[in-house]
Length: 529
Image (cartoon, rainbow, N blue to C red; front, side, top):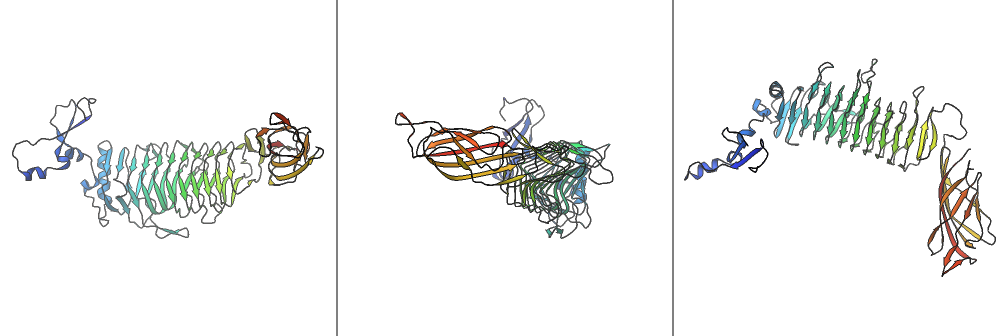
């Protein structure tokens, strides 16, 4: 640190040899951190060494823990946690080694448990269902400000056919905990959960890897509402019995009605989950953005979809990629009104998007934007309808009959019928349509030989009659010529009128008969049928 640095910053200087002519043996013994002086600017106390400063950070080995994967270190590590908590909190180091524990370690408020990466391992060896690490508070006195970072939490369970090889509880569980963070942690091999927060607020799980656990990452609520939790950039795989990434209000049954509110799920990757890849249940205002889900529903259960939303009103499902799920890629179910579904990509799933409800818990106004559903179907079930909107589609409760609103999805080809234009020969290149509800989208390509512009031309035989007039976007060109805009108007019925522009060729307006021309038309219109 330069001498001119801000007051209070640490200053390091090379410690000179105190006595000229000292032996090489003495110099060789003083290496590394023992050669570096440590002081604070403006501090008149004698300078120490970095080696001595580092020793001020407590480590679990200072309390007798041994990383040989043989010694039971549960008591020693618990004593270290309690000592740090008793001094007001702070950092507790887990160095490289495999530290075996026979029962749960209980975290305390303001203790920051930090490893040195994957080389720092806590290995739970037990025969009950206790968690490897447990942060346990109460409703009146929740634990606060805990962090667990940069280590591996290992259990001996592995899943085959949805069943664990041993029963050993969960990896890291918090109950009534606020403002806590779990980051860079690898959790593997637990018969219950991987990383979970129950009845906690403003907690985060980020950049973690969780595999071979019954339910990988979860935020749940029992009798109280919780809010502001986040799961970001986690890698989840081989979930054994339940969901990969899980939000659930009312957890525990027995009249519990707490909700999981305003949760952020972003940048997570979920692969090979037994049930849903991402489950959002009684969790309104969830932001589920930019996640990737592959091969969900491996257990072929009723919950084998990629992303499931039930009781997730006002949630956003945007920019997610869902592939190879045995069920639907995205299911928006009961009591999930006013959701946004936009920018998602699905491929190779049992279906693309299903919007449904159950009884009185209807699904209202689910806005659907521009998605890539390669499975080609958007379906609705129960008390749901599709309503057209200027910027997309929305689903709403069917309370009154409406001839302009139909539960309908259809796509296919059709044969348009050219009308008018004496002496013109038409060649239909392609004509397709897609219908969702009462919105019909057309894409037509026609080539003809004859007068290029002097006569209006009509196209009939549209697949569904229109309810009102509309203008289409059209491109008209002479073969090997430049593109021009053409005016295409669709009136009520099943035909449209084409007014192609004059084309200037060689300095004059081209009207020569037998000139090959091509017209491309795309656009949407409303139907009353």
